[in-house]
Picture (spheres, rainbow, N blue to C red):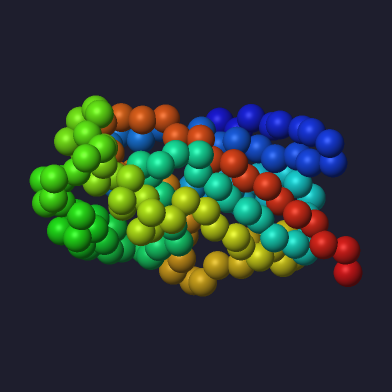
Length: 148
């Protein structure tokens, strides 16, 4: 679901993504739809995740095994019980999820040309959920038009 917000010379949409726990959730088509609705021919798009325990990434979209590989690598790199975390307010994956988010990032900037996001043949945009429980994530999408 996209919610449009407008302010002083600014407009953006908020994309809500429901997750079922850890994993990759593709949002390439949803972001492209927002770009199309903006009537942007040439410009750029900023995508920002408003959370600290998930990430926004460009990843392989053709082979789901690549998602498993990335998930397995990140889980091995930042284990839930690997160090004595001081931030432990909720459940066991809270502090490690914050670290995973810092490593993978929470924003992207993509170029727009001929009304299309510029991505490689096998690239897609994904919400990478680091928490094990279901969540609803809010992603801000802002499209900037350039005048040639």
